[in-house]
Length: 329
Ligand SMILES: Nc1nc2c(ncn2[C@@H]2O[C@H](COP(=O)(O)OP(=O)(O)OP(=O)(O)O)[C@@H](O)[C@H]2O)c(=O)[nH]1
Ligand SMILES: [Mg+2]
Image (cartoon, rainbow, N blue to C red; front, side, top):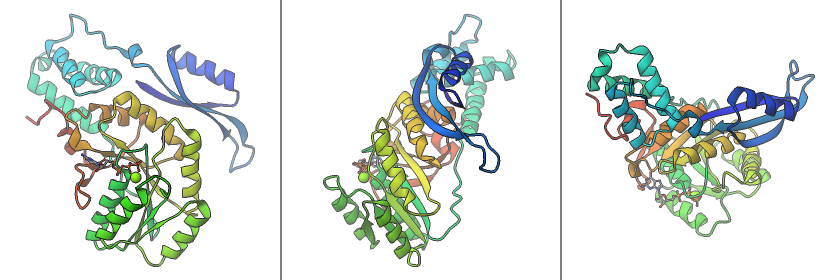
């Protein structure tokens, strides 16, 4: 799938130019009004921003008889690892362009080159949190492991000697309050609950001299529910200053859904992705394809349900361990 985000002043003209650029098989995920142009904040005009993607079927990789056997085998292996069709095409085309006919006969060569290409595609995120306390919010769809990530991050930063506080915006879901309270109290970390931006502002002020890191747990949101996403943005806006927003997604989600989720949550301007439940997948090509095609970077991966461990800063070589058939040779 190829992802796009285009803006223009006139909606119909914008749609037409997207069709000209990406063809007729576009799938629109989100359209919103935005302010465009101007200099130094003056003279901005209202326009539209459209995000979406071009269906995989358009990019289907037709493998002809002239393609070396190794590349056919590679395509099948990438497909087995859940890479998207357009990502597979990207890799096989890159190999064809940059390799001699002779070297493409070697399976070892093809695997090594592919590993290097995939590694290069996994952008990792370096936190740029400047203020103390640094605020990190974990956002994402329901059930992906956000609260677990919050507890894992709290444990990690606690071990590093930081003073940690947790703010939860999930006051409503049955059991949510008890879940985070139990996790936090096991580590002797205070947790408070807020229900609106004003409450958030108050808590941030209260914690400003008592914590080095504040972690915000948020309510799970259906990515199709724009209003729900906006309400997350509103409550985080109550922090009144920079918040690092990390989008948690599960490694067990299929590539096309990851693509949609990342596209929809983009309206919250999140900084990077946390991929949870990596231990539950053997074929993480879905994650790699979605990250590469949306241009998003990976902050952490989580492996396992234990809250005191199992969160790792993202490293591209490590992500490759969650693929089948791509061991280093
Ligand atoms: N195997 C595995 N399970 C995990 C991981 N992270 C979280 N889980 C499990 O996923 C389930 C949901 O985790 P939560 O942290 O409650 O998910 P959530 O996103 O906060 O859920 P909501 O608040 O309901 O939206 C729990 O059973 C966790 O133990 C992981 O890395 N690996
Ligand atoms: Mg939760």
